[in-house]
Length: 437
Image 1: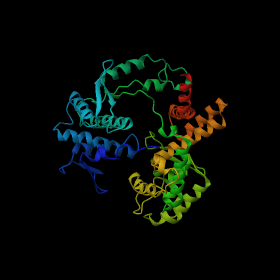
Image 2: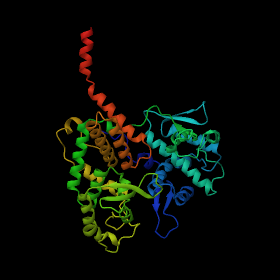
Image 3: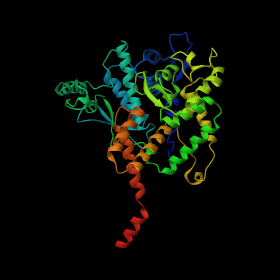
Image 4: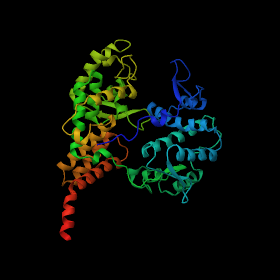
């Protein structure tokens, strides 16, 4: 069972900066203020300028990770717009003092290797987001003419090496499927040009894929309970979509009337995939039960919150969201998790609560449960048919919208690891050891 290792939001909230929402007609959506209430102009300007790539959720996430670093600079009287070497020194000190990371010079190439410690306040994935946010901030400010130097998060030496390497790649403009490119595009992307790089020893593995069937069944039962006892039709539809499609929460909450219509087929919709730059290009498939529930929600519940009182999906414009709050605004992630915590607390204890503890998981874990169950069913049904398994894995990759086939292989490898762990019985090993003695 997944255990919450750190209090959500503490990394951001303890630094004291605040976000002030502006009026709709204002030039700025948000104004960032420091501990004393003074506006932080460069962060406010970056948030205004930063529109692409990615959905708006990417911009909000990056801002949350930028706040601690720039608050750290303010507390220490350091400037954000100095030369790259000065900024890198500040980042190095911040990583050591504030995130409890080990930072060492990379003597083989250029830059620094960053390694987490037991006291680190961020996970490895969160650290990657922090680096991406800093890289994005200085890129946007440089392009806008507000930062006079090159991006301090990029190594000029490594960038030069990569450019020279690309010149030597045979047929570098050809796609991978042509079979004539000197190396795959994934291999090309693996040549990092960033100045701060995480030291990784193991490939990412989804934690829930390693869990026994009992844990996945408890999560499934908890989700079923939530679906049956939710207070609104809106949340019931969203939970059903999460449970039966494996889509991300952001994809479901961002579902628009246009995305539903563009699919041109019942029980399908187009949503904005991760990395699609805001384009609705990923197809999700759902059951007729969800189709009926969705239309019932639009006709009966949503109409009371729609500013124009429309009760038919055909009357909505393409850009309008399907899911609304009581105020008639788009249903956001923060609003969703406000209700999620209440649903999770209402799940009744089961026979395993005393020994395994209560069921604790996030909306994103539903996606992992969905994939893990499919992989397990696939391997059990076609245990001796590798060709069929490979074809189904490809289909699963397309369904989930994964650009890299390695993602589904990570689940497959985790499933194999779980099977080996379940076959191992420490008592058998003890008995064999005693017999040898």
